[in-house]
Amino acid sequence: MNALGHTLGLTVTAEGIETASRARRMRAAGCDTGQGWYFGRPVPPGEITRRVAAQRR
Image (cartoon, rainbow, N blue to C red):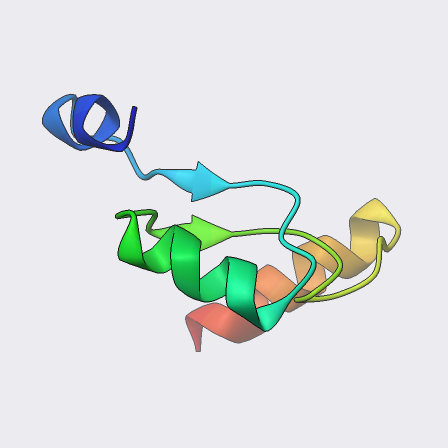
């Protein structure tokens, strides 16, 4: 799936990352980004907008 996504020019995102070990495995498998409890708890939509804007700076 990762290769297909990259061939199509897409960013591959792994979901459900809960541990550092899983994050490393997903990165090694070719995922570009990840989401899940390991990176942060669920937040309201407005908070997501703020965090994404801060990441781009």
